[in-house]
Image 1: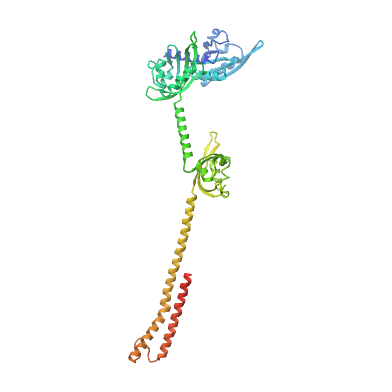
Image 2: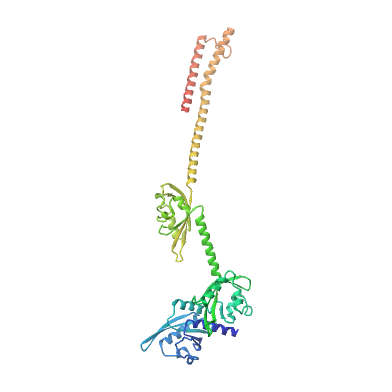
Length: 475
């Protein structure tokens, strides 16, 4: 374990020396215990500082600042940075000092010094610094590119589940890369070794001991070469980015699903900015409004809304902006390009930015014009049926009245006529009067006929009045 820890420190230091001139190991008592210098270092001899406390190095303000930051880094386990400039003769030099709490042993940290006067590509420096800081993170490796022997930090073994004897060569490690990612990995290595890229970096899937693949970010730099210029030693890190890749894939799937639903939906979908301008519209919205997409995108949704309906959901939008509601539905009229009214069932939701400001509204519109026309037709038919029902009830009432009239106005005269007629017939046959229902001796034949005539006229008048009523109803 001690050997692994020593190797891990060495790998971290080698990574830090790629971006600095000097790396200093400092104990929790602020004592300098080790110093490593880059082969390009211009800082001069350093061995006289080993065993001294930082505060004793010089009576300068920058030394006091550095000592204070070391105390802070030990207390908070964070990294700190200062920069200072020195003048000598006709030249000045600027140095950066980074205090890094990335030592494998919590009782130590690193102080990294860099002469900023040297020129190096900013992008290359940033890449190297990222690698150096990552060296204390997940999955550190150290590779001898001539022998193929590779060393992994204890954290690397924790991530992937292998012990140190199971993967000890470059070829064995490379065989664990997912077959689909292997060509990409190989190309990245070849380009870096050939000098076509400033550093090696690739995202790939790596086979864990439990049989599952895990996404990693593999990064590294060559730190030494052979006498004939061939790569000798490389160091780097493997970062576990599996959760990140899963989240990215889920986001990609979500976006593709939304895009598919957006483009191929059977209803109108539009994204509208807080300013009322279209962010995007699907084909159904274009069909509903009659505008080509290019022309519609130059308008606002107010331009295609029926004037009387433009503000009917203003209160609902305000509630949504206040987060009192998260969605609403309402019927709304729209005006097509040819000025026809399109009735829509509108459903609205709101997407927010990360800073809690409105990003865009998602509006879904179902064309219910035909549905509303059908509803209106049904209403008209129902009204017609109701009118017919009322008319039928009226006629039934009239028939009942007619029955009443017949019973009261026709039956009496008709009975009288029949009674007198029967009496006269009886008299003519027998020469006698006074039988039931026939004229008595007090009525002469002329009187009986006269009564018959009067009742007949009364009967005719009633029938005539009924006929007039019937004709009026027909009219």
